[in-house]
Length: 115
Image (cartoon, rainbow, N blue to C red; front, side, top):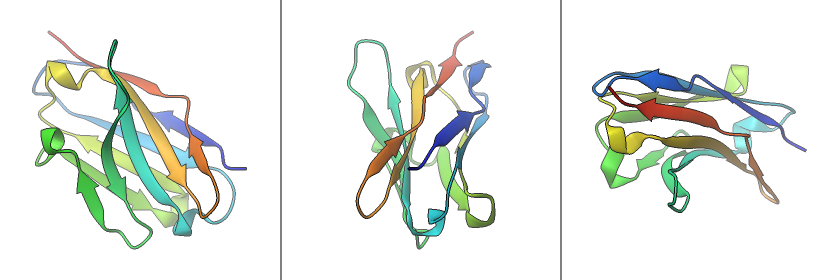
């Protein structure tokens, strides 16, 4: 069983920055594929960014050049640095861990970009 705890969400003005963190419990973090998803009101959950166990990353087109996903295996933590936030980035952001057998989700953290 893996537990994921997100933090770092909040209210920010358009153009601002936030950094989300997701701390994972248990052993084996080094081997997990970690990802951030988001879900805006009335919309389906979408994949935002992924980082593999080897550190390779990929992003949805709408955040390329603005968001950076990273991981610290010593701290069992994955991060999402979000820069130049736009109102359309407003959503609940979820951390996801994929192991060889299961997928786990965090509880979500609200990000709101609004003036």
